Length: 341
Ligand code: NAD
Ligand code: DAU
Image 1 (cartoon, rainbow, N blue to C red):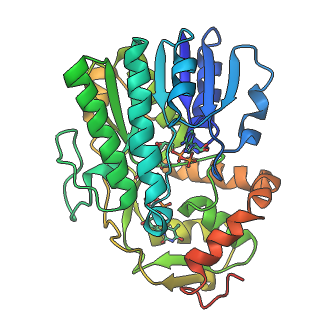
Image 2 (image 1 turned 90 degrees about the vertical axis):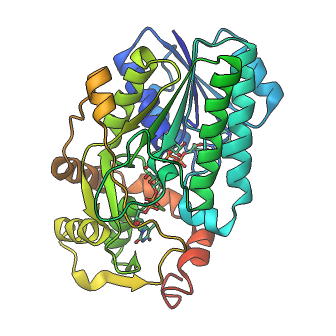
């Protein structure tokens, strides 16, 4: 099988490329990534010399390049490429629409033109909006995105659905909850806490810290997508999640405790605009139809993740220089009384 993975230099995409090369050593993997601030080829050093693996730097909105790549015998497209950070989408929504909506449509057109056997859209639980204190997101929950990021992902999902209904393109959509694990960019909550705590910097907690996210170890997300590629019923949506709901403040306190850092580092800051209160995934369909089960529980997963960041300080300190600093200043400068300078 020849797989096109887009966004394979990002957090989940790079974990997925490594997972697939390990689980299916006979598959060919073509990784297309434009290498935005979030794309990092260092993540893939361990597979660089694998003859089954090729990297191409290209933008998924580039029609000619996507057609050229997909025309060369691609069987399955797995689209991870996206602008993925909610806070950035509040600062600059335009690039989110461009990559997450237009980029998806360009890939769908090329997939249709060259008749791939399957197109998998890696989407997110955020398209369902925010939950109250009870209930879970199922595949039937109406789409009610609240941020420019989630609205752009919902737009991509609707196009995928439309290409299936209108043109019969063989598609699946996956909607996963919050991932954590190795190679996550330190703008996202868990690596942000770890890296700032190790530097004895204040930990910004939005609002009252009681927003809830449903955490899944990245490798469990990869195994779910692998199953969907092979066994997912054409046209279906599959939710992915491991029933690990935690408040943000619980996550912060757990990490500080494990690192032996004081709770006095916690700084409550102005809330995120339109901040979704709670996410919780019902993964029953994936479990009963495809037999998926996560293998990592949160307690061991978070310990392993903290250890990974401790062992790879060079990886995230390199990221924390240059343009990432401009974003930190823009995002947190005023909220934290410029203590980020
Ligand atoms: P990420 O930001 O770490 O990686 C995104 C990758 O896409 C980067 O390598 C970037 O260079 C690349 N990219 C961005 N725009 C591109 C373009 N126009 N053309 C080609 N490449 C481009 O994101 P992530 O956290 O790894 O998320 C991957 C996917 O999974 C996204 O679609 C996201 O919506 C989805 N998702 C993420 C989570 C999560 O918790 N991180 C949960 C559920 C779903
Ligand atoms: O649910 C899946 C989604 O999870 C993915 O689709 C997104 O790509 C991914 O970024 C993630 O979105 P969140 O907004 O949930 O993740 P983030 O790590 O940005 O924030 C997690 C929670 O922590 C959220 O309630 C906001 C809060 N937070 C975040 C940051 C960066 C803080 O309190 N302080 C912070 O500095």
